[in-house]
Image (cartoon, rainbow, N blue to C red):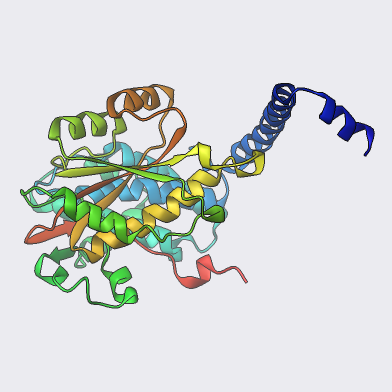
Length: 337
């Protein structure tokens, strides 16, 4: 037995625990500095300069334009801030990509901008505020896109009737984020059936840290989503699920982010399970700042030992639903070797 082992044997258990916790705190602080520095170096800030950063921010703002096409009542004039950002980002993209007009992110942006232009001009709206933002070349591309049929996606309730019988590959193709729902309640049993289907989701050493809360009180849902801030323009969903991960399931510094991995896996399983059960759903982020975190915990009774993973809005499919057309990368963009 070496001197360290003898010393540990002589010390009270409580003292050893305190020492270990101090070592863990020092290691966490060191890890946080490294991780925060890496993120600060590479994240897509608004003054971004690399191709990957520019494309990511452009996708974000184009999605804002696309979401407007899924509203029951289109809001003319909406999205001017997004348009200004897209204009700036196209200019940045042109500086770093010599073939920028054939860039798939640019092409998708032009498609959305063309539909934005078509909707406004067809109703007699002045679009000078839009054309002034873009160069003659980009305006030409937008005008050309406006002449084409925009590939809107419409789903029907009837097309979901056999969701519990189709192959997984077919189910994956069918699932879309749905933000508008039929005006009918979702039973707790329906939601529990979907959660039960997700229980075999893998987790680190089978510790299963994920926790799910179900809310069907419209007042509570409204308050929660007002804090969340990302569901504007749509009616409140009949049900809202909150997915969290319990930090008590993890051991040591190396697992301090594992809750987000395991919680994310469970959430994806749950989204597919909801689809298989014939329920419409939309994942909503819970990347809260301190104030929103505190308000949400107080409102929904979430203890400090759980971290937020995501909300999932849930309802029954309407007879027909318009959804956002969201571009998906091709395999060669994702597969790196």
